[in-house]
Length: 256
Image 1 (tube, rainbow, N blue to C red):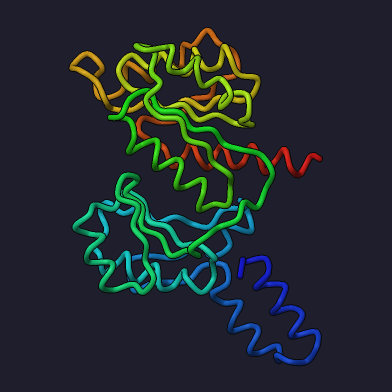
Image 2 (cartoon, helix red, strand yellow; image 1 turned 60 degrees about the horizontal axis):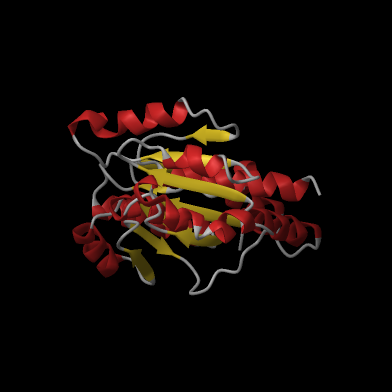
């Protein structure tokens, strides 16, 4: 049950006399946020404000802390997600959290239904320049799918073999938002934006030789793109790109 549905259900129960105001008040105390031990405060209202529930950032947290936060969130959200989870941490979480699924390439752990139907019309196309960019690209893809959006993947279509991209023009033409993930010199988003008629979200990765400066070179290339309609997120931020793409589709849906 979503936060909106849970709040509506509680208000309906009070109006019908099934729940007295005192009980409802106790429930509402933790409706906005809820303490988890002495180390976290879960923002239960985030999905009401932004359309997306809070996501757990894995690095810096112990498996015990991540598991405790997930257990608090699971009753209030249809999907609970933790990002940047290494396999060793995932193994420990599997022992603590029932029904946890792990996406190894994306490094995401999630409590979610086996199948998630898209909640909004439209398609997010996600392209990666090279195979080494796949962890960031898959982070974007899995995040978008868990958030209820339709995703189409197109991997290893970098500019060093531009014919691979050009032979898959149908992916560009069928997408409503494109996420383009690239390291090295980061040229792929500019090429894609010159061919596509939809917003392009560029994601620089830290993949590259010494002069790529851990992703700064592709970041600057993307920021200086001569193609119009390119927005850029932070280095290796596949999660942020997916949420931005989702906001674009949700806004388009509301404007219909």
